[in-house]
Image (cartoon, rainbow, N blue to C red; front, side, top):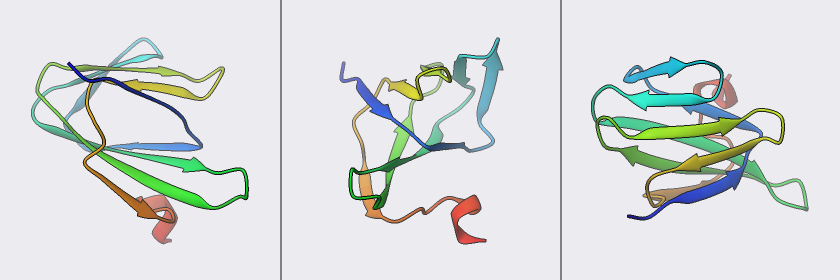
Length: 86
């Protein structure tokens, strides 16, 4: 199985997630996840993931790291989250 680790500035979970404690997020159905990263030049990019039901995503808020049990499905320039569109 493929895993991805990213240093993030923002994560957006869709409605298909539950949280256990402050670091574990479990997909309750096929779920989507958007992770915003910022390069050394300050340019933001959005990494989009599709996560299978029952898979767990680990988020370390202390170090802004996220561990995702999937490969990135799509990468787009800028912040493509709801937060970034406002």
